[in-house]
Length: 155
Image (cartoon, rainbow, N blue to C red; front, top):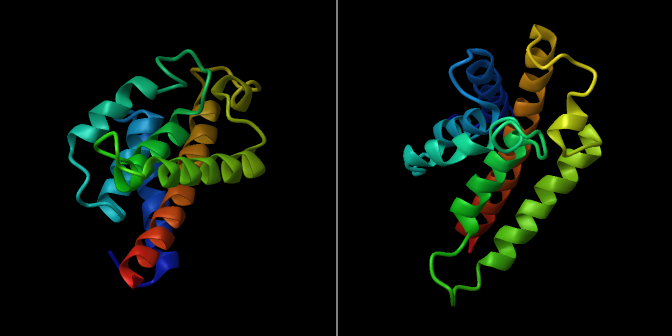
């Protein structure tokens, strides 16, 4: 990871988009993979498999943006709880809401079906459009993670 935040975010975004466009990873998986490679190296590889079911809005139901779900998973990994008495869920929840609000402000929808409504699902145009969405979700999540990790390290 480089020291320049803009360079970090650009590289992360490029990887997320490229992995999605490669047809080897779905939206949710590409976000988790890019965040693992650029921000959260300690995420276990199996976390990528946990994201698989969220592709195309939960099993291709197109009801939520899978890329955002991948980001929420990474926020939960960093700031969520591992036992029931841990007070962390409120922080993970607040950060997930921040990601949601940022994504909605930029993209005007969270529902995969709404985001891609003007495209034929199997078209290259939809795939390219979704790659930008994947990049948005990865970059927005990384910005939150980098800010919060720096705050935690400053304590």
